[in-house]
Length: 370
View 1 (cartoon, rainbow, N blue to C red):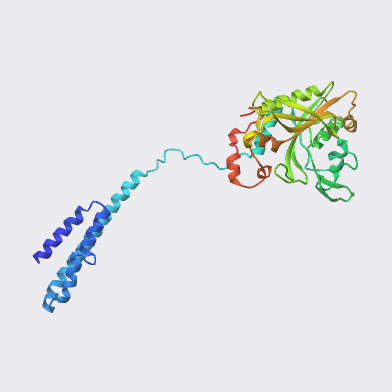
View 2: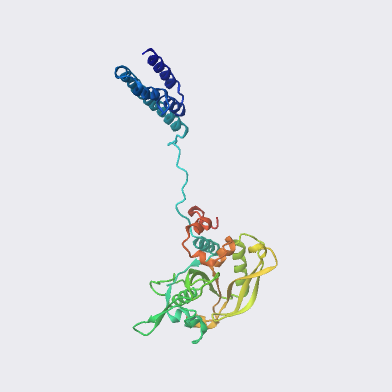
């Protein structure tokens, strides 16, 4: 009895002295494990006489039960202390605002479109719009396209089936139909114009929007974005067009080092016509505008063809003008280093997270570029 009392006191002291769960587990194994002190005492009952087992059995079992309860109580105390320490170390201060969480972004195409609109707005241009589904007159005939021009063929244009009147609608192949609508409505002075403001000349508008062509590769997609520009006034000449586009490029690319050049070209809707190149550096797998000795074509334009002015009811002897068109997506690729146009129209949120813009960075007509 004395031996059991001494053993119990010694084990109880060890339990009380255990400073953490690992130390407590070591005490439990030493006392109640397979070769523990109390376990060996229980195994020794088998070698005792019946009278000794009746005397020693309850004492040893009682020791085991009390020690088990003592260990369980100490474990609960240590676990509570460990939890308190963890809570103190990992406490969240609910009085502080949550960290910012990005839920979305402005698509690069929309960002670039807003930047371009902001630049032209500073020059006094207003925004005009037109329908994506056009008729042959506004998309081709009104823009001086000959009847059998290649652009009318199926490999360039998405045509719809014939309507009840036999006419085949189409998805506009450029935003130039906006120019025809603005000039014709200006001339007709409708009471409630649908696509433009109906202002009388002089006209100074830009027409951003979606366009569609049967084409797809690294630099072409079936749907893309263009921005048209149109100025109609008296005594307009190519010098006005060149200054406008030079000023736009310097402002858009945010550098005064932009060097441009005009090359003669042919467009059915302008005469004379030109394509504009910007000087750049193509080395290192990227295109840097405003440096280097390479050239890159970025847009086309020219003086509005007299036939278009007549078709829209304006006298070419009184009114002249210039027009230009440029790809919004391509300009965005140049400015922000996007290598493949097809990714612009993909649904990869990783791409959008990399190239997207915060809504607070998007320029507007009041603030201009960020």
